[in-house]
Image (cartoon, rainbow, N blue to C red; front, top):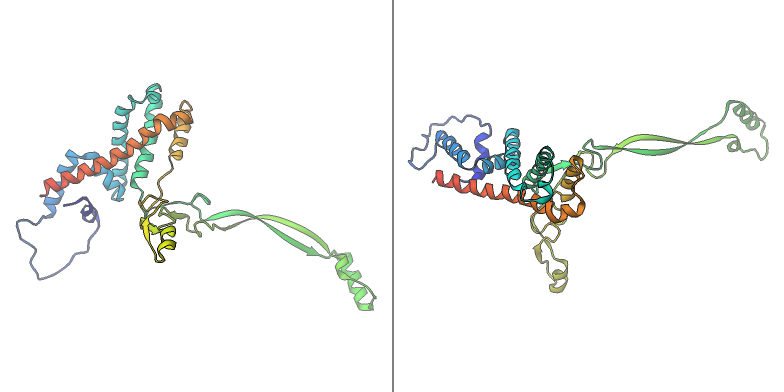
Length: 277
């Protein structure tokens, strides 16, 4: 049994009534067997299973649990990072927790993920200044215009008595970035989540469409969370970590947290296959 099969056991199912008997083969897993396998897998690979369940959106509790367990591992590893080791314990906990949250978000991202639009902050609308030209004729001038037209005054121009003014107002307009949805897809713009794109250079050389690994996303199919966002979150906690220190020391630690999640998921995969073999 693979991890990809887990989410279907947590989705509601409609009862089916059939006269066909259920499978009674000895190698078929019942619901009890599956739940027991989950329990054994959780006992041996708690972080990996919780991270995968949180990534698939089974429950929010798994997301919190995965971040908490990752932060515990991160605290144990942070003593090896000099800039983090020099921080006070409370500050170090908050920094590692912030990095763990961003590491989990990066680990959970896929080509089908959606994030709030940065342009409209997820509202679907933006405020824009609109300039409108207003034209009106004052009341005393209206009587003069009417009289001049009635008597047929030569060379008379009613527009000379009009008062023009420019009105500026702020209105809500639909966001063009997300088209009013409030969310945008994280799929790569070049390959649309496929991981492969047309190689223009080879296509022009061979005369036929040639597809290759997408250079924008390196074949992932989606855009990763910029590490600068994680650094900005760290700056909200403490300013003791400079940009140079982040690039040289703390960013590799942050990348290591992401690799821990990927490694723990692979470990959970092996454990689940072993207990259900």
